[in-house]
Each structure stands twice: as C-alpha cells, then as structure tokens.
Length: 115
Image 1 (tube, rainbow, N blue to C red):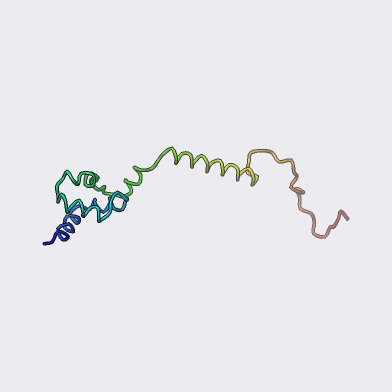
Image 2 (tube, rainbow, N blue to C red; image 1 turned 180 degrees about the vertical axis):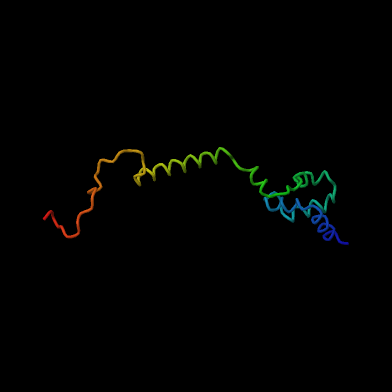
C-alpha cells in the first residue's frame, strides 16, 4: 500500500481532520505532509485530533450551547420597543382621544343636510 493510500485510511479513521480543514486550520496538503514525515504518531497530530469530542445525540443541543443569551435579550428588548411604537402609531395606546368619531345615532337615509 502506498503512503498516499495509508493517509487516506488514516483520514477516514479520524473524521476530525475534515473539521480542521473546514475551519481553515489546515489543508489536505498540510495534513499529508505531516503524515508523510511523522506517520500516525499521536504527538504530531495532537493539534488536530484533540478537537475530537463525543458527538452529541441531538445537533440542536450544540446550537443551544453556542447561543449568546445577552444578545438574545437585547434583540427581545428591541422587538418590544418596536411593538410599543407600532401600538402607539396605530392608536391602540391607553390614552383618551379628543377627536370625535362622528354621530352616535345614524342619520336617516332620506334626510340630507339637516332638511
């Protein structure tokens, strides 16, 4: 088996190497050069393999862990202020209106201009 094929097998057994590449920490060329020089020696791979943590059962838990609650609270406060402003503009505020809304009793159909 060639060195290249051995590296492919090594990379398949360590999926955290793919994460290092996706994060921009390394390239396939860099990883192959490390493998070519050091082989599968743990000391050479400690920067790339230490990132392997047990995968969580639910990816949603990973998302929840990374949420910044202060940022969420700021966004909620901003949304509440915006809703309050919309309520004031649409007249749903708790103030008495001084503008009359028209007659209380409807006008007869056949009566025009107070005839």
